[in-house]
Image (tube, rainbow, N blue to C red; front, side, top):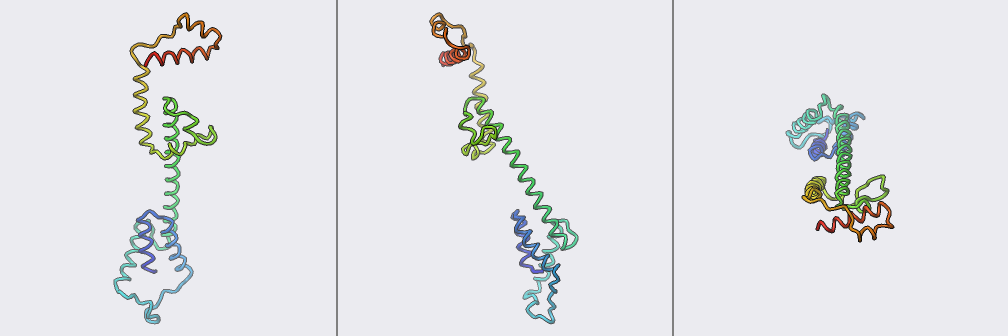
Length: 197
């Protein structure tokens, strides 16, 4: 086995680059499985390591990979690395789904509070609930913090000491006489919000 390739595979694993490590190990193991003969130092002088420590380092790297992957033999390293890469991919997908769910929930709360509007908070089809680019770029922790602060502010405003009056004056009765029920409710809400200022 080529010690430089083993070192490169270990470095790729340390850097969480499972695909690169997998490719390097696959190349090494396929080369060994294909029956590439081990170089005989007596017959091939170029196969003799330039440094006697290289053979020991190569063996140590192979042992390290076996210990890291739980493999008992070099042939099992590839299968172990493949399993690790698939587990990492599954965890990444799960993490992304959880983050998107949290982001959607927080954006919905911002809409309920009245800080965001659905037209600006979501992009694409409304039923897909895909966050707009601005809210996608904001971290989930920042969204949580914003929702917490704005929820407290919203509660304190909505729980004022004196509830605004809902009864209409005679003049307001005349104005709202021809309005529908929804229009009257909006009129009263708008009037009350102006009086609360």
